[in-house]
Amino acid sequence: MAGETIPNVEFANADALDQWLAANHDTSGSIWAILWKKATPEKYIDRDTLVKTALRYGWVDSLPRTLDERRSKLLLSPRKKGSAWSAVNKRYIAQLKQEQNLHPAGQAAVDAAIEDGSWSALDGAEEGDIPADLDAALDARPPARTNFEAFPKSAKRGILEWIALAKKPQTRAKRIAETAELAERNERALDWRAKKKGPR
Image 1 (cartoon, rainbow, N blue to C red):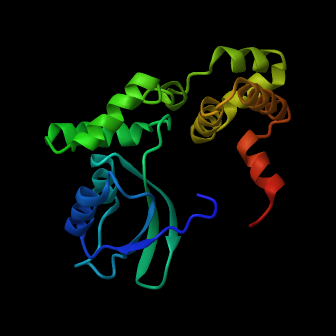
Image 2: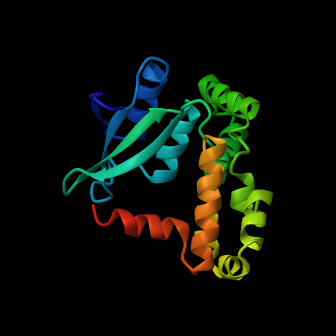
């Protein structure tokens, strides 16, 4: 999205969002969805409705931002091919199917994800399964194994997802090595990276 001007589109209610996506899901790029906060209940779109509506048309949400006292904005984009699906979004898809409310564009996004493996890419991480290559790296540094297992469940899941999302084998190997090395010092990889970047 570097250099790209992303348009703002304001939505007065959930129906307006659905109607916009119905008309534009297959021709528009990313937009900043301008959304009203709870203090304006007649225009407020709850998060479940917003995410389900985007997924219905093969879109996905990210990057929430505050706009002013009454409004926020949220980046909505067509889902990129190969992007991993979270368990939460897969549950929303199941609900849409049960309601017989999944648009063909949303079904096409699901079918493509199943075909290229991105549908199940995060399953192991979300279940807390340690992959064999990380298993070996932790075993090579005995304190790392003990420390990693003692990390909070949410922290472990975040690290496992970070490893699973590596696009290249060398990137994955680097993330595994970093995870094991830091765990040996009882430090969490993603926490360490956040500290290294400093405040922004």
